[in-house]
Length: 290
Picture: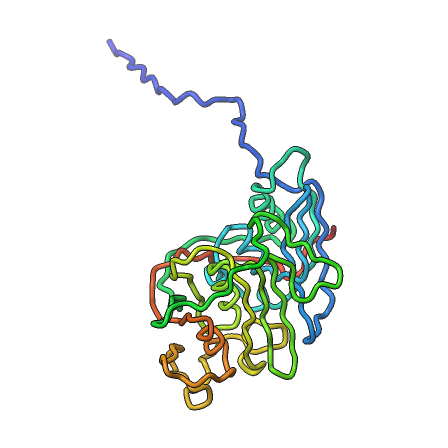
């Protein structure tokens, strides 16, 4: 007599109901247009979020990615053009939302309109540490301290940038990078745009100050139409060592951004450190239609 053996295969129970995946925050509506060509006489760059609106003027995609992911400029790696092509972006935040969520909304906008894809990695970075020189800092306290979360407001016919903003001007003395009511951290980010290495504030100095950094156009980095990357000028041309660190008794020459920083009792020291980096896997040069 044959016996039959019945095998029961127990399968895991699968939930037939779809799970709810929360949507990423997004702007209610957004307009992206190429910026008008900039002139070398006066450059205005704006990145403001206020009153339910985001207004970015003359920004690069690298600027946008940096803001969206709350990182520094040097932490974004991608094609060279992301630091040169400029756009004007106006976007409306959803009713009842906070401007604190604007970075995440900007992430969604970049993914939707520019098809941005990226991943994170930790890399060793050569950088400059912004520190006080041996004689101590020589800083001018801001006349009008501002709330870091407030948008800069310009007064009619006022000279220079509004508190909390920066401008670039050219005259017979050279290029002027002016900033009012800026922190040392903000100053470090500004210098990074004109240095062959990123600059990190390690002064430990708090407060807001007014700055007017003067240097020659030949040494401009990150400026529209100016040189990008590459080694610093030779020491024989600038009066500073090739490392970018000025000796304490260096002559007062307005030849480079390094000399200008030194006049504020600050200096740049070369260092290396592991830093989280955003590496762009894909991004479109032209955004989809508004």
